[in-house]
Length: 148
Image (cartoon, rainbow, N blue to C red; front, top):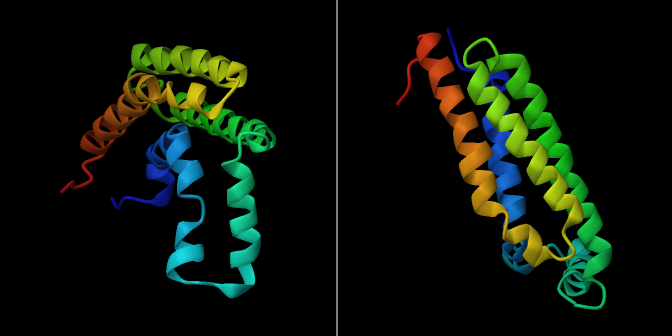
């Protein structure tokens, strides 16, 4: 049996969502590859303008709601995938992940700044991301898929 993208989607969503919780890094590193490394002149001016607004106290609020909605949407997807794939494997772990995830979703929606979101990163990692990864590893062992 081979490992597929379908198999790793829950873990991948956790990795991406975890990066979004590091909101300050998101703000400071916004599109740096395109702006500084590839120097795409067609995009550079627009991206620099967006980055300035994203990092300006007076305009960052308009980005905050979008950022929160992406995190909450990803967490909803993580919950759906964890329930559909791992509930028979470890019901208690799945229930714990879903409970903590829903609590974090509420806290993200109530966040009033990027710093408020950043403060939740450790909780996401310990209560959602690592338990999902553990369930994934259990699934891999059970499926006899070779791991490195």
